[in-house]
Length: 508
Image (cartoon, rainbow, N blue to C red; front, side, top):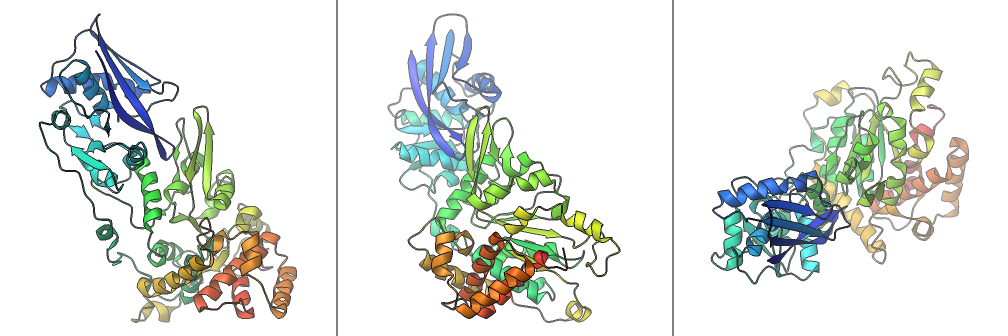
């Protein structure tokens, strides 16, 4: 007898439908899986066979052929265990149900018949709704994640026996419900706060500008000045994730398997900090079957690269295009996949090889130049703010008073972002000033003649590139937004120019 069960698989961050066709026929007792299965899918026959027996069902005698269609796309992972088992039961008349065409199902089976969580369920839930299915059968641990998709019945199942009972109508299972407002209605009592950083008010101001405009930033200072401490607190002053941003971020984290059991959404902006020994595949994503890398896991959040010059230059160079485009495309023999990578790049480095400022360093000018030369000019041009982090003075360390809290700074950042959202309301692809293109720069960053002369003098005196010119305008626009000003003034340009530290003669 032939049975058909509906499932889905993930390709990139999107899912596509998979039909699990099961045919039970005459011959030697064997289970054959076709349709380009990988090793994990091929191993399903042993898991499914044992799970059926331990769940109290009869193992089908004769030749059982399982086809995963479409047959020209490779199938990966253990998520087809549950639909295979249901299909085998239906093909051998151990399950009679009219709901098989109405529900998609995914899940890994334990040998006991328990249903274990799988990756990529949020993308699969979106595909189920797009296919106009009634609902989705998922493991209990994945139910909250899938339930954020409205208009879809999400049925949490604990084991194979329960799934079969629901499909036959013997067991009633209430669909999983989540309250999105409750998920987002949470306090921002972070474990860390900007107020914990003693002194460094100028650096906090620069990070506020970076957060307000979505600008990339480079922190330059001797060891022990608080560069890492400041960077880790940047996410506490960024605007809260919108629902759309949370869904995109959750998709990526779900595919990699970073969601906690029962977690519905990623509601805080990610902060990823890969080690400087990371490979290009670890940073961009890759392997034989491409998966998201660190820059995609930092989507809508912060990617922090500590000790920037210690990263391999080839690894850093591969980031240039994703920084500009907001996405990364990985091509392998298995095909090409595109992952989102719209993140804020924040890096930290020492000013010289021995960690001291140039005027105090014992390193020779050539050694300093070689150290800085590990970071290419084109990559530096893509970093909007070069922020000098000085040594903290004793009276700042010993003072009992604290600076502004993250909540206070975040209010100003959110107000500036609202001005940008109103400005770019007709251009949804531009979410902040850092994403402005040439047309937007011309429209929204027009300068008075006196301000133009100031910028012209700075460009010639510091020998800045054309890309640095654009960065200065974008940062100046953000500074004006923080001040609530409609036009960019000379003060805004002057402050933006000071954040091009590595372009100054002192460093070159």
